Image (cartoon, rainbow, N blue to C red; front, side, top):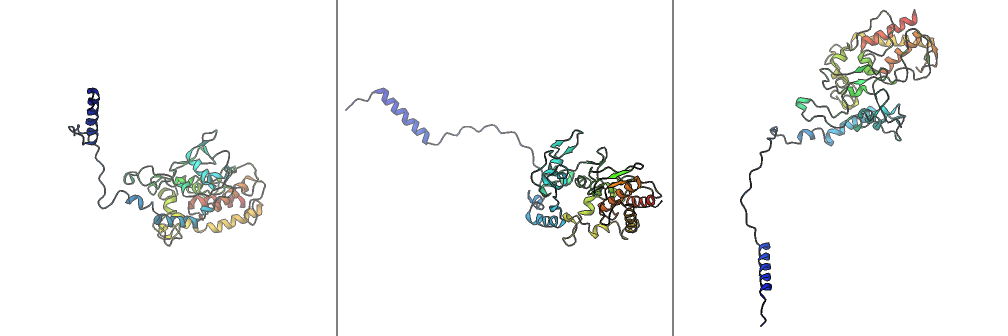
Length: 352
């Protein structure tokens, strides 16, 4: 029998203890010190789990009627010439997003779209107007509906003038999002009171949406006349209502209110219990009279296209005012007294 060398035996014994230690349960040491207490969470609402309030809006069943209403409004098809820098701000989804994101600033410090234009004209979609919530504390901060911008808007015709549609009916200013496009574009200047004016385009006038400036009571041609102009921002719809309040009320049958932006009768009669205000009732007659006078002056044709040429200040201003009321497309409802003053004073200027 061979003798086992002592060093080898000791090494063999140590390896055995090592293997036993690796395969047996470790010896539990004493517990460590307690950690620092965390902050208490906010109490939930009884009977409501953490996602219910979100799912009430962020679900297919909620969004599908909105999508259908939006399609019926026709705004999903408003994309003609939307690749150009001039038109993309309102006729291109990416252009509108760029405008509100302040990615591009002109030499005067105002937001513009990508000066290189856009390769594809995508219509305005949900993502054009909506992004993310500024706060989830709707009870204290209000529900901003995740609209991209609630900031006051500098006007294109005069960037020194700002519109901020914010009142008790729209405390957050959600209607300011609408103002970005529903204002006169800066394609043409408002004719002055004395000098002759050259109309160079059949699109002359506040193309295409002077709704916000009509509501505000500005940006018409202020022809002097027998009818006084109301003060800026004095209209009842401007002080006590808003774009959102009137145009996005609860629907009656799915064809109005909400994302159709068609005012519902139920919305109107909350304030106008006796029907439309009397200032609006004679506007159609006055518009027809002014139309005939402008046809005689030659500044418009029978299809209401503006006729290129040089005209007196009175004719040019009256043409601008006629197109302002026509393009506003509210039959004077946005600002009855202002609409009445613009048209009646225009008629007087051409008849005298």
